[in-house]
Length: 602
Image (tube, helix red, strand yellow):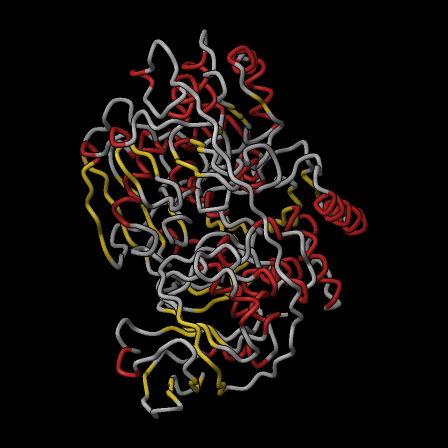
């Protein structure tokens, strides 16, 4: 077996598992964050469930350290009270990013399993641990039962050949890979990375690469343990860890051989992490702000890299540089090493540890017209504010902040770029649209909404500015209000309508609201070529009917927006009721049907 199969087999008490097997996986550590935690607790309370093992259960408050938003503060306090009553450990607002805490505190280890309401929980692949981001119902089930159902994914192997070019960061490596594979070529796969240079990667570098597996559409990016990694984990946690590797005869769906020597310093253009370009092609692009941090690049190595460039220099006039360490331990280490002083002397803002702009709850957000260069893992439109976000390495962000425009450390100009301000105002509000209760039929009829787009992410479906909403009745009104061309969807959609779209629908975050908003509107089903891995689980667990189709299979029907169709979940058919033309689609599989007929996972 390969790495993920070995971990899942061990945690499902099976001798062997293979892709497609649906198994119950025991979870070693079960986490909930501040924005998802309140909904996890609400699910448990509403269904009369209790926590199976408080010693394996934690809260991490990393989205909004300090509770600067009143709704976040209320959710955090609600979780604290629940934790006190149930003996659950809380890593509060002073602690930092939950996935990093899991690694540094030994809550996850090579070969372990970890789940969280964090779509980047697969960052644990950096230490050959199975980490998964899941929605509120999944996490509630894990807290109550200690295990969750999971479909064993297919695995692919990536070999990085050749020597690593000088100055090429881990962020550049993953951006190069994203430019090759995009957001859906490895969709739903477990990825293993190998190579002579790979064995030398530090923990921080592995974290950077694994963190952006979500943006690649992968279930997880796993690194086999190396002697260097095990030694580093021993230094951090004080614990000895056992090696985790694939069997010599492990099977993979596909093997890719990439030439590391051809990789270049890259940035991701605003809008999509996989829309990558050589930095040379955007050098001198004027910026308004820079951000260094997130679970992708907030380790001490990242801060040292930035400090080495900022020492003795100043951030360009008019440019704002925001720096957020990943954990409080990293913050303290940066202070002890004098890095905080360097940042402050350079004119940067240094915040307490946490997720920062990526989670919309801390420093890092930008305004209309603002151009930001960021070390974050996502730059979806609207994700980090109203402006545009380029993604890059800490070294590039630091150098660009000094230059006032995108550049590399070796080409910082003597005089920074001239700053010119721009800005727009917007902020329309949508009218309320109440949820309509829908029965659970196996055949539905409705009018079609055709959305011909790939990679529609959860920020386009249900933006993160609404994440504090816990009442499904309030969610429908915000559906697709961040998807260009469909901002009026919620106003025009009718109960029973059917959405048909393309590849990788629901990419990105683990938010359950991106499913619940459709239930709020009474959408009868969604049909797509494929779904983001977390989104697919969330929809199935919430009993929202979702189905898939093979490319080209719908063409004979000749569907247009507004056409009326009938969909059979059991037979896997789509019928145009006006012409009686039929298309074959993939029917419900057994586990999906069982959850649907149960009215949901819980």
